[in-house]
Length: 161
Image 1 (cartoon, rainbow, N blue to C red):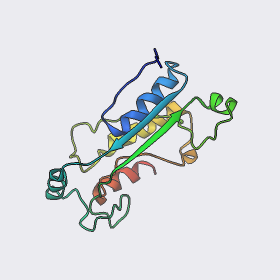
Image 2 (tube, helix red, strand yellow):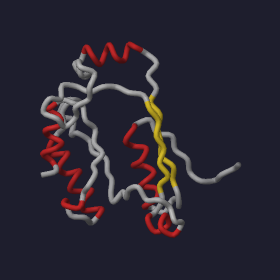
Image 3 (tube, helix red, strand yellow):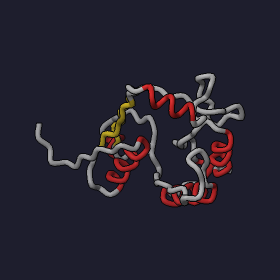
Image 4 (cartoon, rainbow, N blue to C red):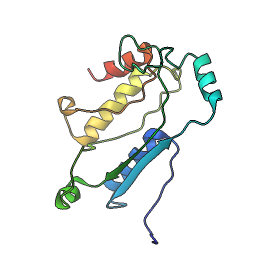
């Protein structure tokens, strides 16, 4: 089956949904598929992450929890079909969620990987709310990178207050 529709391969986990969402909002396409697969085939990754204290020694991810002391790695696959809300309703689709806004942040090159820059994080959240034209009290789900470290997740959570 030939297709002339745009196709993008993206290696960053969070960027997949973001680029597809932006394509829909810009009317570059009428339907988009966003998905990803994570397969871990090399034990060296675990050794390196453990040596850098990224991994939780209990093997449990406790992101956004006071007892968070690292995260756990896992394999999986997921796929989403994205459409403008009006089209999904017209097509009679089961609507599992609505992406009201999205954006990418850069940590201002002033904080380590395991911590968030709270100023940059707050600017991002404000930008997304403004673009989506919604009040913070209307937000029911936020996708965020969490290292499982209390110092990092404290910055993330404080952004939303």
